[in-house]
Amino acid sequence: MKQKEFSIFKYYRTIWITIFKQSLSKAGTYRIEVIARSLRGVFLVVTQVIFINAVIGGSKSFVGWSLDEMYLLAGIFNTINYMSWSLFSINLWRLEEKILKGEFDFILLKPVSSIFGASFTEFFVDDAMSAISGVLLIGYYVVNHYQEFTLSLVLLFLITMLSAFIIWFSFELIFASFDFVRVKNGLREIKKQITGVGKFPSDIWQGNMKYVFFTILPVAFVGSVPARVLSGVFDWRYAVLSVVISLAFFFLAKAIWYHSLKRYTSAG
Amino acid sequence: MLVQNPKQFIKVTFTTFRLFLSTELTYRNQILAWILADIFQPFILAVLWANVARNGSNALSVEQMVTYFFLIAIVSKFTKDFSDQYISNKIMYGEFSKYLVKPFNYLSEALGISMASKFLRLIILIPFLVVTYIFFKDMIIINTSSLNLFYALSAVVIGFIINFLLGNTFALIAFFIKQILGIRSFYENTVTFLSGEVIPIMVMPIWAVILVKVLPFRYTLSFPVEILTNQLFQFEIIQGFYIALFWIISLTIFYKLLYRLALKKYEAEGI
Image (tube, rainbow over all chains, first blue to last red):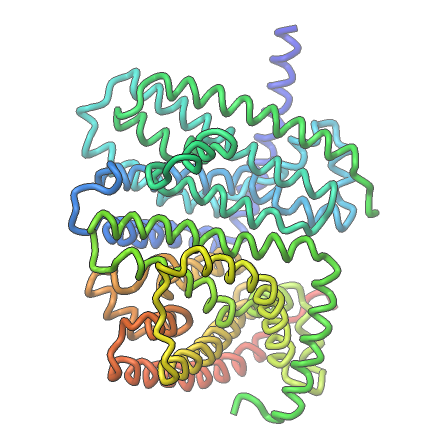
């Protein structure tokens, strides 16, 4: 059983590496795209620094977040957002187009799971370049606060980052699933706004709204929780919670995907 | 002159408006989703900046912040332009060739599509705006004097014209660079930041405020809102109009020159 699971993992890893290599050669053809996205990454850092400084203003903190922690939050969100775009978000965004043109049938015929086929068809190198903005901001925080880090803190942070990716993927999967039920539903625009909440400190919300962003729509785990874990404000319990929430959300997304897929009717 | 035959231009614009409207109404579900998404961002930003105001971090009050983003949600429906994506996609996929043989300017079609998109979103947004106003009317402070409203409406019209020219000038880049998705993202981020959609211009650092006042983006969104929220003196309003008109003339000239250059470069694909 373990050997079978390992060989399935090897199988998908081999496929993804092939996709990655093809995507790299495609990126080499459209170099201007890569350059434009890299410049955009740098521009994002500048605008976000201005934005955060405008929010903090003359105070030392904003709703309990210091300037460095705000940079860290922005960096984490940017990294997750743009790496997600490069890995799976664009592929799932184009699912609607594939369904309308009847191209999704070819994905279903391939010897891979439909989730993998729909999500990881291509790796977008140019979007990964925009993640530079996130790396720079996280790097700024690390350089200024590395004395405070312990091995356990860094491990907990990495666990929360992985959980954040899983939650983001689950959001994409859930909203993409509705394309099987009704195409051109516009729900992706709503998803974009919901996940965009993750770039702001969760402490701006009070009462029920805060509860919603930690549970039903767990966008707080996409930005605030990893940032708070690395800054030492949240302890290991939040890392455990992020794992539980991410796995629960992922299984829910998977269930919704397969349930919606039953209603898929080919256009081709 | 950008438009050779104004009567024909208007006729094609309204025909395209009706056609695009009927196409979009085929998929009605997405319209509601767009509206909800359009409300979400100003709502989130209003909550954020209201917290900032309560924090005492800058000069604007909670009421000014709530009013600002309420008006942003309305004004953006009038000034945003969606035709640049449509035109750049046509160029990228070789479908622009048909516009070269048609007996009308393609900008009339672009304008019709832009107006139809805005019309739909605005009509459905109205009930949400009314409900929002009822709930938050104590926090929304707008100067509704007739002179102010006249200035604001003029600014909205000028804002749309600038946005339309900017977008369609930008779309011409597709003649020179086939893949412009990355550049378009860069452009959209720039417009979002410099137009005041995310940060009120008044809370930016001084050097950024000076830069933003000189560039055209402010006049596409923030300028009408600043007029309505009494953030400007009379002379600042007049100054703003002069700068906006300068940009309309400059962008028109630049567009015509770039279009002439682009057509020499154009290689249609798929034919």
